[in-house]
Length: 153
Image (cartoon, rainbow, N blue to C red; front, side, top):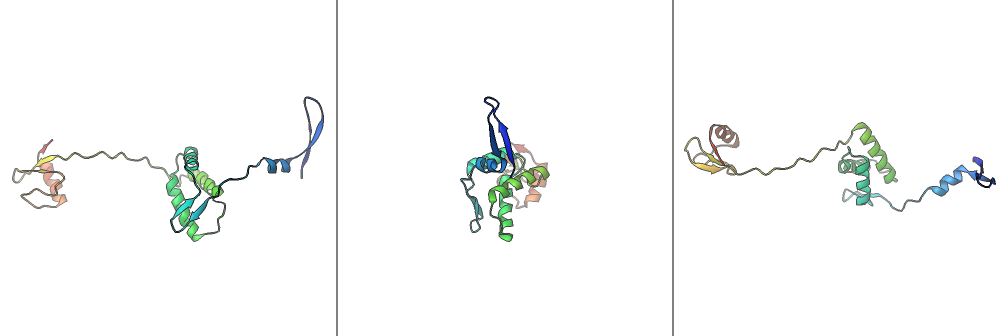
């Protein structure tokens, strides 16, 4: 155990200081417990504040995908007990080596339901319909025929 003599700059008195005791005294005890419910395939004890903080600290990592893979790993290797430390280590490695890249979410644009003119009969039908009423052709044939037909908005 390393003992250091500290001298006060104001009054000049000396005091013994143990570095190992100081580390033990300043470490805050954890008030949370993270575990895995194997039946439901989910972690128990991860709060939304934790997830938000992790996502902010590791922005390139897909947190949900990483946690899902950790559950599958646990099913094979159930010896892990300190999940908080394990999750932080995995987040660090994932960001460093780009293991679980976070993909930007694609914005879904609703497609308009155009009215098409059939090139065979000249009749009209909607894009949402599979085929023109005059002919029953497949989607591939429809795509070929639509290119030759006119689109009415």
